[in-house]
Each structure stands twice: as C-alpha cells, then as structure tokens.
Picture 1 (cartoon, rainbow, N blue to C red):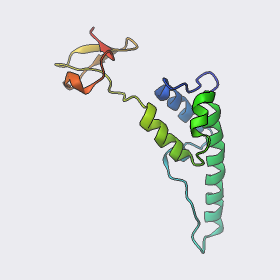
Picture 2: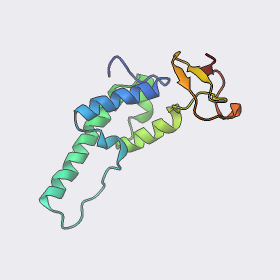
Picture 3: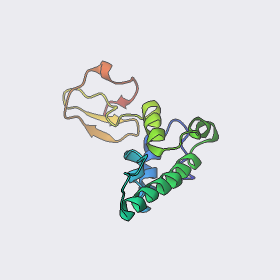
Picture 4: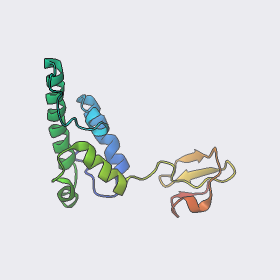
Amino acid sequence: METNKFNGTNYNDWLRNLRIVLDFKNQGYVLDKPLPTALPERSSPEQRLTFEKWHEDNRKVRSIILASMTNEIQKQYDKLEDVPSIMLRMKDIYAVPDWHIICRDKSILRDQDGRRIVCAQSWGQDAFPRGKARGP
C-alpha cells in the first residue's frame, strides 16, 4: 500500500490494492458491511466474540486506510471512526466508473490506458466525460 498511496486521482487502483491486502488478512468484509453498534441484551459468547472481532478489524482496517493516503487527504477522514463511512464518502468523491468509454455502433475503442475495448452497446456522447476514450 505504501507504493500505491491514495492521492485523490487513483481511487480505483488504490481500492483494488486495498481489497487485495484486506482479503489476504480476512478483513475485507469491514469495507462493505455496516459496523454493528450494539449487542443484543442476551447475546451469546459467540455473538460477543464476533462483535469484538468486527470492532477490532474495523480499527485495524481504518488504520491501514488512513496510512495509505497522502497527509492532506488523511486529514479529511481521520475523525471518522467506522470504515464504511470513510469508504462511502471516498466513493462519492473520488470513484471513477469503469464504463468511462464512449461506445458507438459496437466499435472498437481504446481506453485511456490504450487497451482495446469492444463496445456491446451504443451510448450517447453526453453520458461520459470528454477525453476518456479514443478511437482504434
């Protein structure tokens, strides 16, 4: 994660790398599921262990996320305690849709990295930002 610090322009790549690291540690679930806030009154020992593990994993994943950001971006998120809140805000601000190409008549286009893409559907030109795709 050190070599792929989130800098505000590399969200999709950063998130992919984060998921790889967290999946290896069996902590990826913390990214997508809401943090449980309370245990039922008569919770079982197993429920308590699960609750405690979830909160511990949230703390660890939060630290990994914050450490993998530039200092400027880190300051925007260091007050948030739960990982899903951090991820939701980041997604709203920084996520780039994977379908950021302009497709017409099932043509072959290249994305901004030069990869060939065969379009299965025609999209209106106004649906996508300019400059994200170029012809064959």
